[in-house]
Length: 309
Length: 308
Image (tube, rainbow over all chains, first blue to last red; front, side, top):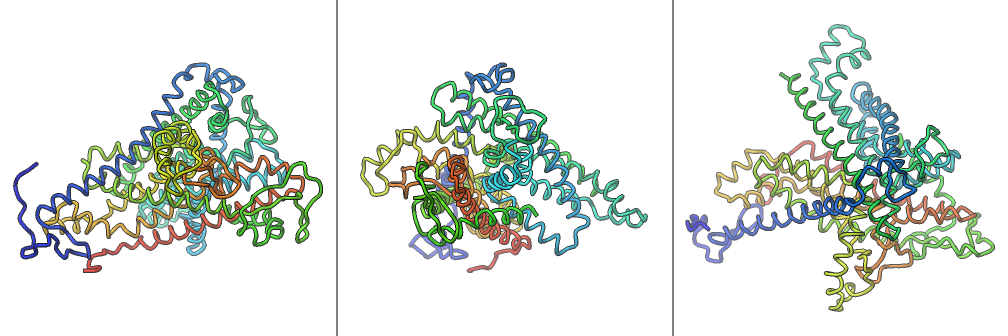
């Protein structure tokens, strides 16, 4: 503790409080330092309350999964509690599907919104897409179930699952693509017009390349969300103990989060370990994606800086 | 586009249920597809359901609202406090890694949170906190503790941990957007660091935090898998105490569908569609409000001079 007294800011009031600014009264003198200390103590406590559960989540998952993590996870199927092969492959196939569907549609929609959409319609669509981003994933899954699985008689399988996931993550791809394109300096856009370049050609050849890192990081966010989702897949993907096949319909797909979810309600230590191992593999895929995303976004920031120089 | 399709399909599927149940959907407490062994059907407004079936979502709405509000009440102050410490006090070197940490936390799948609540948090709370508190006999804090800790309070706490990253990340950006000159002005007036935060930063970010809280609330309202695992899934009325089993609208859609497709009249599936419609409506409204506030904030105005 420092002994040096701070100078009294207001004199002549001995109730220890000044009227303060903006209606907040500030304690004076020694109370001030105590208040300062108390404030940061509360903030520190809040920070600890945030950090502790996160660490606890990560530690508990990996701790529980530790006895089950070995090569058999990748070589055996979920018919035994030692294997996850079909679930890992299923998750990767679903990610690939999302990459194809949400990637193409989302990037195209984003480019259209940034470069071609008439102002008013664009604003409405943008707002709709942002609201869609907040709609609950179970609702998306349920509509996928009643409209595709039952309504179109598709049965549970790869295609309805990929479509449900894609609807869920589309807004993120669209938003990132649009923002990335808007960050391309308008001087570049004006230059292409001045040179008489066709609008579509100018977008494809000149404007999209510098925006690519931003677009890619949007797609990575979409993949990260897809990796961890369970609710939209429960009734659209089903579950299967065999590896994913090439049939998009009527062939159920196993995936990692379903293993965690199902095992949580089955008693027995083996299932607990398998569920935690599936969660651990999910987390590892996520961490890889997050770091890839950070690397790409750092590159995109550098690209924007170079352009604006 | 897709949003319109979602709403259209839900309304189409929910239509029989809307006619069959009428307003009792929102005012009664029993949600049951009727007995699987019952013979005969009930007809109402031209639509059929299994005899004894009754669809009222009052308890589901109650569970959704209460659990998300408890989560929000804890998450908002904690996120704001943590974000203030992160930006205003911690050294800049730490901010990068802690930012990654926040991002990772936001990315943890809800099923992992569910597993954590079920296997780690729940049992510890039930043994070390709920039991001693329950022995005090305070109304609402006294009954029905599961050894796994499954129930309203545990689910709310896990929801809270899940929405903290959303609110904290937004708050962090808001605090960073506080103009440096205002901060310097506060220092020049001889305010200590905490006073400058309370008088300059907090008024500046207040509306933004409200918007972030609305977005976080939307997430908590729609959370499914974690709640399904931790809620105890109780369809039969209100929880007996804050520790007791309950359920939410989202968890019910996921938990009930397996049973609902057994319903030969299909009314249970339609009723779930109506639950989904209500849920979609509520989350769209909260999101809409949140985005509207954020939109308004896009033209930043200094809150200086307010109330002085």
